[in-house]
Length: 240
Image (cartoon, rainbow, N blue to C red; front, side):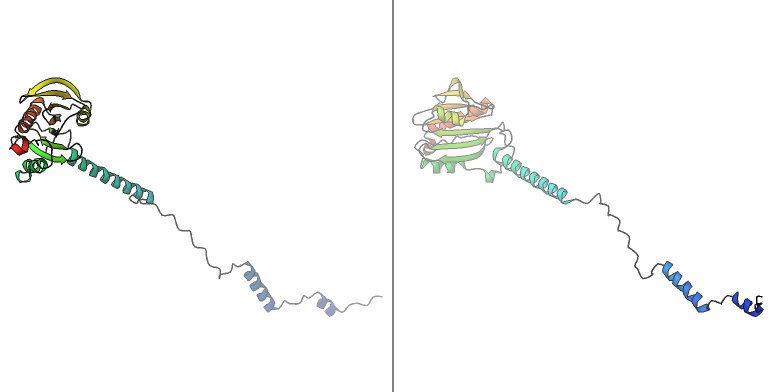
């Protein structure tokens, strides 16, 4: 026959032991620590936005092209100025030379006559003719060259030497072609035409030859040729 259990002992078996308060508290702290994000890690800085290029700024390539354009413009400008100074525009000379700065043709002719084997021409032209150049070239074929601006504002060139061969004529007036005969101051001469509206008069005397040419009208060329031949026939600078 079973022995009845003690009621106090049965109650003791079914009573649960209380959980220590400190253990519950510790467990909660550990769970929070596991789920929390560490506060010591620094936040990543946002990437800077790309800067927009100003519409007024220039790249290195733009600056280089601008410098090249400026250099080219200045070079072309200098070439144009030099061309106008030395060659004029359309063989016309618009600039007026002050009376005090005009070329002294007589003084240049005197110096040339000291060397030239022919009577150096010193054409007597009025003040409407502006002297531009007076040059004597020595050597095997010495030449005396004068340049004037005519009253019609065109360049007229006078070239004198001992003789005027076909090669000499062609070098002075490219494409030269005889168009007729003319007598100037008693000397037999010829009218010639060349390229680019150039034309002239060539005369041959005793120990001298001359060509007067340019794009001027026939009246100006005739005036210059007559004054030149007259000067030579009178003995040139030596006879003046």
